[in-house]
Amino acid sequence: MTRLVKGGVQQVRVVVRALALLHLGKGASAPQVAQVLMLTPQAIRKIAERYREGGMERAVFEKARPGAAEVLGSSDKQRIIAMVCSAPPEGAARWTVRLVAEQAVQRKMVPRVGRETIRILLQSHDLKPWREKNVVRGGT
Image 1 (cartoon, helix red, strand yellow):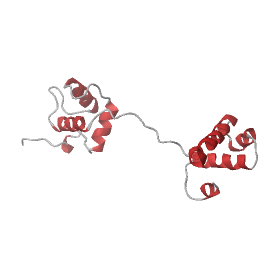
Image 2 (cartoon, rainbow, N blue to C red):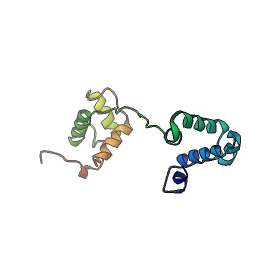
Image 3 (cartoon, rainbow, N blue to C red):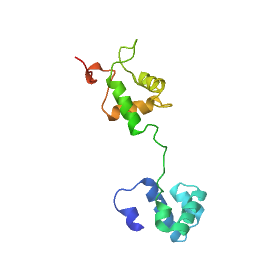
Image 4 (cartoon, one colour):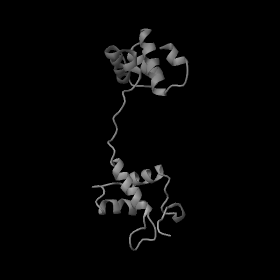
Protein backbone atom coordinates (compact mmCIF):
# COMPACT_ATOMS: atom_id res chain seq x y z
CA MET A 1 0.00 0.00 0.00
CA THR A 2 2.88 2.36 0.75
CA ARG A 3 4.26 1.63 -2.72
CA LEU A 4 0.91 2.67 -4.19
CA VAL A 5 0.95 5.99 -2.33
CA LYS A 6 4.61 6.88 -2.95
CA GLY A 7 5.29 5.59 -6.44
CA GLY A 8 4.09 6.47 -9.91
CA VAL A 9 1.13 8.42 -11.17
CA GLN A 10 -2.21 7.36 -9.74
CA GLN A 11 -5.68 8.83 -9.64
CA VAL A 12 -6.23 11.11 -6.68
CA ARG A 13 -9.13 8.95 -5.48
CA VAL A 14 -6.91 5.89 -5.37
CA VAL A 15 -4.21 7.65 -3.35
CA VAL A 16 -6.71 9.15 -0.89
CA ARG A 17 -8.33 5.75 -0.32
CA ALA A 18 -4.92 4.14 0.22
CA LEU A 19 -3.98 6.90 2.68
CA ALA A 20 -7.25 6.33 4.53
CA LEU A 21 -6.43 2.64 4.88
CA LEU A 22 -2.90 3.43 6.09
CA HIS A 23 -4.26 5.78 8.77
CA LEU A 24 -6.89 3.25 9.81
CA GLY A 25 -4.19 0.58 9.99
CA LYS A 26 -2.22 2.73 12.44
CA GLY A 27 -5.22 2.81 14.77
CA ALA A 28 -6.83 6.15 13.90
CA SER A 29 -10.59 6.41 14.08
CA ALA A 30 -12.81 7.20 11.09
CA PRO A 31 -13.54 10.79 12.25
CA GLN A 32 -9.82 11.46 12.78
CA VAL A 33 -8.91 10.13 9.33
CA ALA A 34 -11.82 12.04 7.78
CA GLN A 35 -10.52 15.27 9.26
CA VAL A 36 -7.00 14.70 7.91
CA LEU A 37 -8.09 13.65 4.40
CA MET A 38 -11.05 16.03 4.13
CA LEU A 39 -13.59 13.25 3.62
CA THR A 40 -16.64 12.36 5.65
CA PRO A 41 -16.38 9.73 8.38
CA GLN A 42 -19.02 7.75 6.46
CA ALA A 43 -16.77 7.68 3.38
CA ILE A 44 -13.87 6.40 5.50
CA ARG A 45 -16.09 3.69 6.99
CA LYS A 46 -17.18 2.61 3.49
CA ILE A 47 -13.55 2.33 2.39
CA ALA A 48 -12.80 0.20 5.47
CA GLU A 49 -15.86 -1.96 4.82
CA ARG A 50 -14.85 -2.57 1.22
CA TYR A 51 -11.37 -3.50 2.45
CA ARG A 52 -12.83 -6.09 4.84
CA GLU A 53 -15.08 -7.51 2.10
CA GLY A 54 -12.66 -7.68 -0.81
CA GLY A 55 -9.19 -6.64 0.26
CA MET A 56 -7.00 -3.86 -1.02
CA GLU A 57 -8.11 -4.12 -4.67
CA ARG A 58 -11.78 -3.69 -3.80
CA ALA A 59 -11.20 -0.84 -1.32
CA VAL A 60 -8.90 1.31 -3.42
CA PHE A 61 -9.91 0.77 -7.06
CA GLU A 62 -13.35 1.24 -8.61
CA LYS A 63 -15.21 -1.42 -10.53
CA ALA A 64 -15.65 -0.88 -14.26
CA ARG A 65 -18.92 0.84 -15.04
CA PRO A 66 -21.07 -0.48 -17.86
CA GLY A 67 -22.01 2.89 -19.35
CA ALA A 68 -24.88 3.50 -21.70
CA ALA A 69 -25.55 1.20 -24.62
CA GLU A 70 -24.61 2.47 -28.05
CA VAL A 71 -27.48 4.18 -29.83
CA LEU A 72 -26.22 3.38 -33.33
CA GLY A 73 -25.13 -0.01 -34.61
CA SER A 74 -22.39 -0.33 -37.21
CA SER A 75 -24.88 -0.68 -40.08
CA ASP A 76 -26.78 2.40 -38.85
CA LYS A 77 -23.53 4.36 -38.78
CA GLN A 78 -22.66 3.27 -42.31
CA ARG A 79 -26.07 4.28 -43.67
CA ILE A 80 -25.87 7.69 -42.00
CA ILE A 81 -22.35 8.28 -43.35
CA ALA A 82 -23.54 7.31 -46.84
CA MET A 83 -26.47 9.70 -46.50
CA VAL A 84 -24.14 12.55 -45.49
CA CYS A 85 -21.89 11.84 -48.49
CA SER A 86 -24.85 12.25 -50.86
CA ALA A 87 -26.52 15.52 -51.81
CA PRO A 88 -28.51 17.29 -49.09
CA PRO A 89 -32.30 17.17 -49.25
CA GLU A 90 -34.31 19.60 -51.37
CA GLY A 91 -34.27 23.07 -49.88
CA ALA A 92 -30.98 22.65 -47.99
CA ALA A 93 -27.71 23.99 -49.28
CA ARG A 94 -25.60 21.58 -47.20
CA TRP A 95 -25.82 19.03 -44.42
CA THR A 96 -25.81 20.24 -40.82
CA VAL A 97 -25.65 18.08 -37.71
CA ARG A 98 -29.27 18.93 -36.92
CA LEU A 99 -30.38 18.12 -40.48
CA VAL A 100 -28.55 14.77 -40.43
CA ALA A 101 -30.26 13.82 -37.15
CA GLU A 102 -33.69 14.82 -38.48
CA GLN A 103 -33.22 13.02 -41.81
CA ALA A 104 -31.92 9.83 -40.15
CA VAL A 105 -35.14 9.59 -38.14
CA GLN A 106 -37.35 10.74 -41.02
CA ARG A 107 -35.86 8.16 -43.40
CA LYS A 108 -36.37 5.52 -40.69
CA MET A 109 -32.68 4.63 -40.45
CA VAL A 110 -32.96 4.80 -36.67
CA PRO A 111 -35.95 5.24 -34.34
CA ARG A 112 -34.34 8.26 -32.65
CA VAL A 113 -30.93 9.87 -32.49
CA GLY A 114 -29.54 13.00 -30.89
CA ARG A 115 -27.44 15.72 -32.44
CA GLU A 116 -24.48 14.92 -30.18
CA THR A 117 -24.45 11.30 -31.34
CA ILE A 118 -24.39 12.49 -34.95
CA ARG A 119 -21.69 15.05 -34.19
CA ILE A 120 -19.45 12.40 -32.64
CA LEU A 121 -20.09 10.02 -35.55
CA LEU A 122 -19.15 12.67 -38.11
CA GLN A 123 -16.12 13.70 -36.09
CA SER A 124 -14.89 10.11 -35.82
CA HIS A 125 -15.02 9.82 -39.63
CA ASP A 126 -13.43 13.27 -40.06
CA LEU A 127 -16.47 14.51 -41.99
CA LYS A 128 -17.49 18.16 -42.01
CA PRO A 129 -20.45 18.30 -44.38
CA TRP A 130 -21.09 21.96 -43.64
CA ARG A 131 -17.82 22.54 -45.51
CA GLU A 132 -18.65 21.38 -49.01
CA LYS A 133 -15.03 20.82 -50.02
CA ASN A 134 -14.65 18.00 -47.46
CA VAL A 135 -17.62 15.93 -48.61
CA VAL A 136 -17.24 13.40 -51.40
CA ARG A 137 -19.84 13.88 -54.09
CA GLY A 138 -20.42 11.49 -56.97
CA GLY A 139 -21.27 12.18 -60.58
CA THR A 140 -18.99 14.99 -61.73
